[in-house]
Length: 247
Image (cartoon, helix red, strand yellow):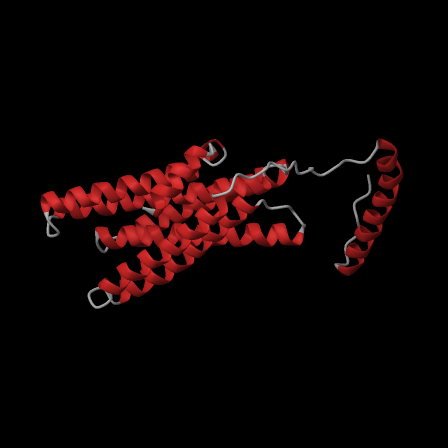
């Protein structure tokens, strides 16, 4: 119900245009719930087909949640084209590596393969969100209220899922009921954070990007920069007992 309320609110405010991947994640989450209800009602809880389809939908939801986290990072860092070009390639490379490792090491059962994939992608999401907030804090980058609360919810959800899945893999049978309870409770809290962040219509405040100085400033600074670089080069050459190459 909370996910449906949040999705309807995003549709009413047309926020799906701003956060299309996050809206897609909520939609997939609702579809997954509907599919699970139908599968277990028709096939029962002991059906292997229902088991595999249910865990396959979980893998799809986790991947889309990772894309939604990348979308939040793009909203914060997108105005810095150089930084975003580097960070987006780094995130894509890390995501592919995590996916390959999860599939390779998840050979001890389909269920555990998906949970390993979930742990890997959730670790990737949590790292990206923490790195995003640290970058914004250090460089005094303005983070809008919706983006900040979406990132907070994604990071909190990922941390809880990582701990929950690690305990679940160690104590499968005895922790099954608690695993469901912890996952559901954490998701309800995260949905509350997201609803709080996206409930009110946000007024778009233009955020100024990094400004460039005039050409005269650069012309006066470049000789000083070059001189300092030459001095640093000479000091490093003396430190490593090597002579700098001369043209």
